[in-house]
View 1 (cartoon, rainbow, N blue to C red):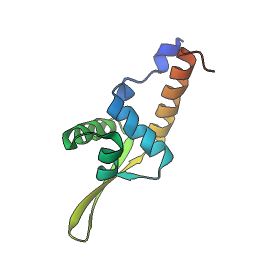
View 2: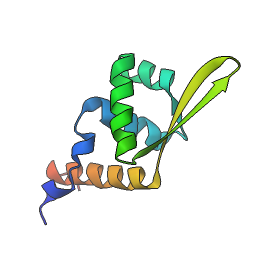
View 3: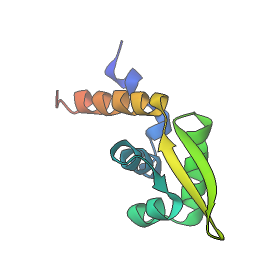
View 4: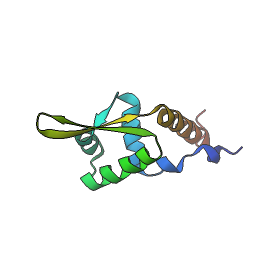
Length: 97
């Protein structure tokens, strides 16, 4: 099997790569945290989290804090596994084993 086979298209976009990177090192991140850390627009965060959720790589939890809506994102077990495989494939591709 070729190294390139483990490169996951779901993580091709820099915003999705950033979302997963943040969720790998934090228990969760809320919408504003992702927006701030990635310097992305509301629409960008919304569409990229939706595609990661559809792939079952992240879990979305909506709640209210006081009267304000709050959306939290968590990496799923599958998401963590696939992201690790993706990063390992990238490292092999660039020769950093």
